[in-house]
Amino acid sequence: MNPEPLETAELLAFARTVESQSLSRAATELRVPRATLSRRLARLEARLGVRLLKRTTRRLTLTDAGQTLYAHARTVLDAVARAEASVRGAEGGIRGDLKVSMPPLRDSPFQDFVVDFAREHPEVRLFVQSTTQYVDLTGSGYDVALRASTRLEPGLLAKQISKTELVAVASPTYLAEHGTPTSLADLRGQRCLMMFARGEVPETHWPLRDGKRHRVDGAFFSNDVVLLAHAARRGLGIAIVPRLLVADALESGELVSVMPRRLGAEARFSIVFAERELLPPQVRAFIDAVSRLPRTHFEPTPLPAQKRAAVRERPPKPRRRRSAP
Image (cartoon, rainbow, N blue to C red):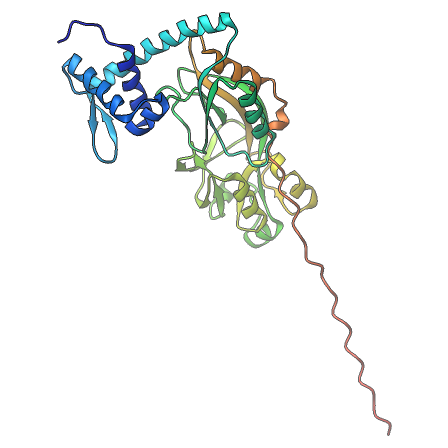
């Protein structure tokens, strides 16, 4: 085994490859040729005398030795980043990479905020992934994530940005045809319109007001809450969606609440980040800026009112004239 200490560049090449799951993506993010990255990885494996990565044509996987090294490498690289951040913080400059995961926010003021943040900090390279799936902040290389959830994995911190009420809704037409449930037992046989848990697997339970969850049978699944609300309004079934999204439809009677005292919950929208002793300046600046935004930046846009076709009365049939005798 080589007695010389490991080089930071080699550890960084290894960690970034693990986090991006691609040699090409890792090379792009590090701004080095792919061949240079491969040489650094090969040199690291030769220096340690063990295989760290299993490479196939489709994916990269860690060996047992690679998993052990990655945990320590991440600690070392974070310490280097903290040391660099302390100097940069003293100089007052904010620069470096910032990777953000967020759910799709249609026509949201938050999109303008992201652009404004990038303009204000031109030395920050911003990577924004818009997805409904949960990103592993402890192993993916992402710095922060915006999430609508009440659950938090170990090792993560969260700052609440806004909150909204989740309500169960259905159209009067659907309820007239399938019956209005008044108890949890009545949900059997109903057409339940469901989300995806963590954006990955179909939901199997609905939240209850007492904090518990109730198992239901889903008839329609989507990770697009706007589509679920639209499907409920079209009479496809019962959906649990943010109240703000369907407030107008509830007021107009296009949708009605279903078991409002039993079904539903409070959803919190938060910015989530990995727990660190000292956050890099660009990460701290982004978290602080997001925390100062008004909650309206994250509220769902209400569905547009349904266009109701004008019902034209049929013209009266002309009376038949009686022929003169």
